[in-house]
Image 1 (cartoon, rainbow, N blue to C red):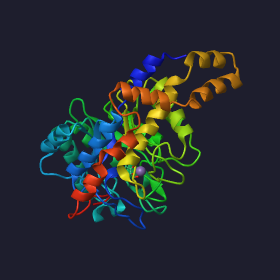
Image 2: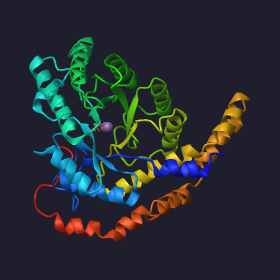
Image 3: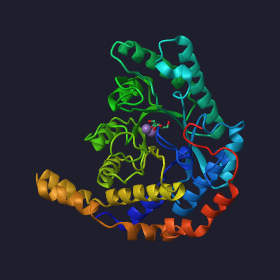
Image 4: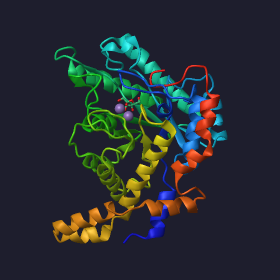
Length: 386
Ligand code: PSV
Ligand code: MN
Ligand code: MN
């Protein structure tokens, strides 16, 4: 059996990044349901993220989205974060909310539009320099809706050219994380639809380019843990955007739809040595109808639970059963870990970290929700697309 104190130490050392946009208002294309007390600017998002970290102890960084989190002085924003007990994490680019990007951004047929998109990506690296962020996270909405609309290969050439220019701009210690998504908003062909395409581009670019796996960006039935294992073997897994999907890119709380899948993914991370590497564990979620801060705390806890179960897999017993071809025993070893109630273990870990064993209850008691509801009146509430 794995050593309990080593498991606890690994859990205490876990780091899960929360996204600034999860704190703001969001919705579907049908309706955004505004919530009270929602942040009105990037600083207020950071203040909320600091609460999540204060109660979980494992969410020390916050991903920004440009231009949603645009400020005049990014060093000052980094300082603000630090003063609140968190740090700025990945910088997410946005080349999908401008009329010019109707036919794509860095894959667009027009050189002028490609230039505009590239200048934005380069600006994101400037911002990373100011914030001290390590990762530039790239998700492209580029693609086509109709066969023949544009040349599939030509678009790949433009993508490669654009990515190479941004790659050249990366400084020491900075990385480019390329995210894939099988469809939406493009419905016929997406330019980075799958891990294979992302991997091929990252391989050509070099070691600072890595693939990011958004758990909601796959077709139903996709074996995501296989993708994780493969990317890890190739040293090309840069990070995760965790969330849950029932249908498409639902962006629901991670571990809500399929906690068993999350466990299988985390097991491959542990198995592949990714847990102690530079892999970024990020959330990419939107809380449209539920209270945002407790939902993010719950999500962090869900990742912790899946991780605890993955760390508890008796890998020696599993290896023996696998070597002996004992199908049932091998499966039973894995399921034993999955079926373990790890909540008492995590409660102990939190107490040893000086935290309340029940982060959601502690948050509810803290009065923060009442404070922000009273304080944050007026102004424009920040949100997806604000
Ligand atoms: C759009 O699909 C998306 O959800 C991607 O997952 C990005 O990571 C996120 O938006 C933020 O740009
Ligand atoms: Mn994502
Ligand atoms: Mn998405």
